[in-house]
Structure formats: structure tokens, C-alpha cells
View 1 (cartoon, one colour):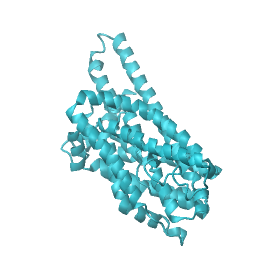
View 2 (cartoon, helix red, strand yellow):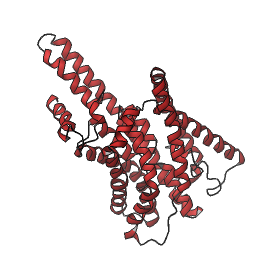
View 3 (tube, helix red, strand yellow):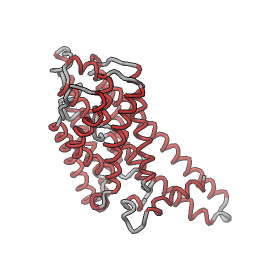
View 4 (cartoon, helix red, strand yellow):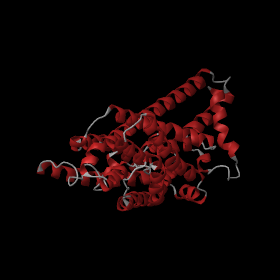
Length: 376
């Protein structure tokens, strides 16, 4: 959440000129928070870049089947979900606008952290985040225009192109250094990656708490908006997973596309609000992106926790079956680990396969589903 806000003056912690000003000490605290967040995010993306392999990254770019599905989820599913939520909850125009803006934003970097924690395809995750940010240059105004047609709004939206460019720089440069380190020093990159994953978790919690405290003057909780802020990212995670599954992607890719779909770039949403509306309107609307940011992180942590528990249960069941049937389960010894790795994405070569255009064909990508269901 705060990671997306850290690299821009559009963050509530940076917008002292448009939001109610606090004491001078608070302004200094906001500056320290912004700089520290930017530095920490750069280091975190550098560590995540150490997990990216040039061969797999080039495979995704050369045959961008996974990236295409991710972009469809990002700029197709999420704006549609936002429109349906605004209609279903009978929101006021000013409330509906902020929900629609959030749905039209590109993916956030928090998805890369969650993807690493669920053993997802980091090459695909970073590729999707970068491509969705670039595509936002044209897709954000298009999606906003189409989403607000039925609302008959006189308000025009200003797209924060400068913020999009800053996000691209903050994402690509640290990741590029990480890819280089992984290529030159693979052993050291694994240590950097593990350390970065731990630091990333602590960093997310610190930024979340600090961001909410610094933006407390703009916090105007509304039960309806809080409810939408909770279910919106959750619906994005679920629908992204289902669409990836229907398009014959591997389990590892399904988890990746799911997290990339539900995690939005909070910075972009706040920047659009500040550039398009008055200070009084921004104060009324800012509570929703703050709530969305909080709940997308909490939902992500729940997904990570559920995955870790499931992974541990599968491994314990296999160990128990192998130890109890040393001779009678010789066949299970050769198949069960494959089933586990197929779902968990351990050394999953099919994750490199972009989809139906590969020689393996779509049935190979669906094969793990059959194994898991029959095993259960």
C-alpha cells in the first residue's frame, strides 16, 4: 500500500498543499516517511529482482500469453467489477467516481511481494506490473471514459502521466540491477532474496501504520465504502485466479495472475483525485483508497497464510504416507512429489509455457488439475 504511495507527491503523506495542513513537525515527519519509503521500496524491488531469470523473462516477453491474460484482468475485469459494485451499493456520484478510478488503475508493486511469498512466477509478476503500468498511459483514460459514460458526469479526469513515469523508473531500475546480480552471482542473490522477503514484510506493516497515521485528518470512514474496500480486492483476487485457470495456465501462474489482478496501484488513484478534484472533494474521497490499500494488504496476507498452511499440510501428508508404507507405496513415492510440486510451483517448467501457442498444448497446462483432484 504505502509502497505505491512512496514514490510520488500524490501520496497523502506528501500532499500537504492540498489536504489540511498540520504542524511543521508533522510536515517534516511526512518528508522523512516519504524518503525512507522510497529508499526501502527501491531496495525491496532490487531484492525481488534477484529472483528473475533472464531466460524466463525473455520467454514471457517473446510469447506474452500470460501477460495478455493479466492485462485483460487488470483493465477488463477490475473496471467491470468497480462498475458493478457502484451500482449494487447505490453509491452517490462522488463515491462511485473514486471506486471507478480505483478499478481503472494499473497493478501495484505489492503484488510482487505477495507473489514471492506464494511461490509464484516472479518473472511473470514483474513483467505484468511493468506492462500494466506502461499500458496505463492509454488504458486508464479509456477505462475511465467507458466506466463513467452511464453516470453523465461533467467532471473531467486528469491522468497523472508524471506519476506513471516515476513508478516505471522506481520499478525497472532496481529490478534491472537485481536481474544483473542474479545473473552474475546466483548464490549471493539467493541470500539477498531471502533477506529482502523478510524485510519486505516488516516494511509493509510499518508503511501501513505510518501512512494511516499521517493521513488521519483525511480519514472519513463510511460503512459502505469500507465494505467495498474489503470485498473489491478480494473479488479481484478470486476472479483473476478463475480467469487464469480457464485460460489453461499452470497453478503457479494462476496464483501470480490472481495477485496481480487484485492488487491496485494506490498512488495512481490518489494522484488522479488530487489532479482532478478540489481539496474539499479530495478529503471526502480519500478514505476509500486508504481503506482499499489496507484491505488489499490484509486480504493478501490471508491468501499467503492459507497457501503456507496448505503447503505444510501437503508436505506432512506425503511424509506420513511415505514413512507408513515404505514398500507398498513405491508408486506413490514417484507420483506424490510431482503432484505437490505441480500445485506448489516448485521447479515448475510449465510456468515458462505461455499457453496454447506452445508445442505442449493447453492440455499439458491443465494436467495438474486432474492430479490434484484425484489425489484429494
